Image (cartoon, rainbow, N blue to C red; front, side, top):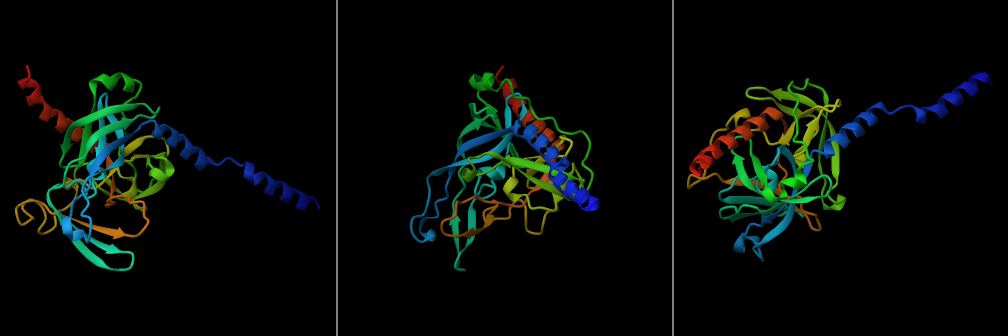
Length: 301
């Protein structure tokens, strides 16, 4: 009887045990959501003319991307999240397969650039953003907070990346904004690193696909910021035969996108492969943009 009673008490106490992992996830998540900036913009839609079998498209649509504050006035986003076709620019060739198995293709002219950038800060305050520059190596786009709006963002602290590399096999918490169905609320994914490329700065592969988390920040379970989710930089991946400059017929790069077209879908845009890029990539890219701005500043004096 006493044994049965002891077993019953033990079972009843299980739900009261501390959820250590859950506590760590919630603590890091709360910290992470304060570092994110939701970027709203007008995304140009490709005009495929008669190739689309009806209305060719064109115009713009309202879109959102995950960004973060790199310094006192610079918001960083991943370029591929600003474009349906990975932000490559140049002519676009798209292959698609419909839900019933039919295949087809379309061609478009030079891809137009997004515009009308707005940043939504963690407290809901909205600021106006303008294009500051792009880093072709990493694919980061840098947006500048309008001078008149800097006061609104004064309470924000720029992100601080960890100085040491993440151990292989460690868990990481990736945080970005969800879609319209979740009212663009922050969300997280618990992943684990399973590979690393350290030829330049570290680029981490994970056991879980991160394509839908591009632009998100990756933390270890102690709350240290490891890096950003983005496609691998050019310097960190080998060039395949036939790729690179002059790959297209006119010497411009042709972006080929594989898309699944299904009726009633919400349309999540282009979801390419992604990795966790060390924060050192961000620091280098920001320095590159700053150097490009120096001649302009000198000319203005």
